[in-house]
Length: 221
Image 1 (tube, helix red, strand yellow):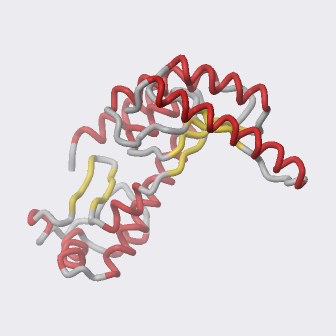
Image 2: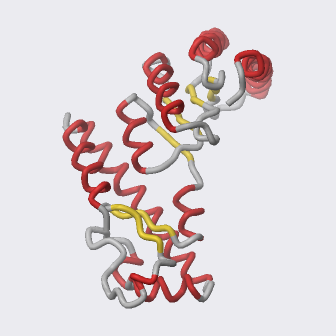
Image 3: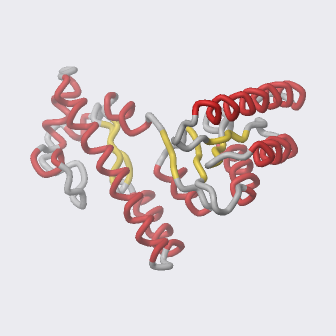
């Protein structure tokens, strides 16, 4: 991670760009929402400075950037826990570039509303599938003769029609169909568990639901 001086220089440059973006957006009369991105590296004081300046400019939503870029997981969680509760309550909260199912569950608990990440599709192309009970790496020989679905609890097209053994075969042969089927599953899995998270929040069950979800994930396939 960048040291304090490096992070401060970059963060203040981002603030100047934020003001220019706001001005251009307003001049164009653009009806789309414009988000300000909180930067500052792994330094809480810089995160606070960045957020205060962005609030002064005024944005439709607020994003936390500069996390999940190779820093230790503990640092990411520390900065997220520090920054997320300070975001304006009535604006959407967006965590950029994150992440694993466990990362999303943790971030939602801190009030994050939206995410973007290549992980479901990138991992799918590399034969890494997410399931309710842990992850599957299709290259492993243990799946060569496994006639079960990727995830028995999943209702996606892949799980309904194809076995782990067939997907293992496609992966070993570098067959494009495998990447497509894997992608269908991973995207469905992410959509399903975030849908469940939303329902748990709406019914006041997020804490027990997330604890059960994480316990299932740790159980392993």
